[in-house]
Amino acid sequence: MLTLQDAKNRFSAVVEAAMSGRPQEVTRRGKPAVVVVSAKEYHRLLKEARANRESFAEHLLAFPAADIPRAGVKPRDVEF
Image (cartoon, rainbow, N blue to C red; front, side, top):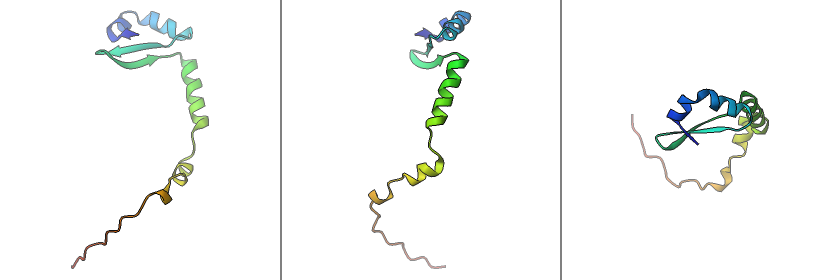
């Protein structure tokens, strides 16, 4: 794991390592910030994520509506 400053100072080495199949983790202020991966690996991950993603309609249909109890509150009277 590299600090942001180290990654800046050795950016070419970070890119070379990522391109050779070793993702490079970079921290910012001591916390994980980013991972540098090769473009080939990025596109592979993106393709895999798209292939496994359900449609929005499927997502809505999977909602467990029967498991949620309805509130027994009556609306208040409103006069205009």
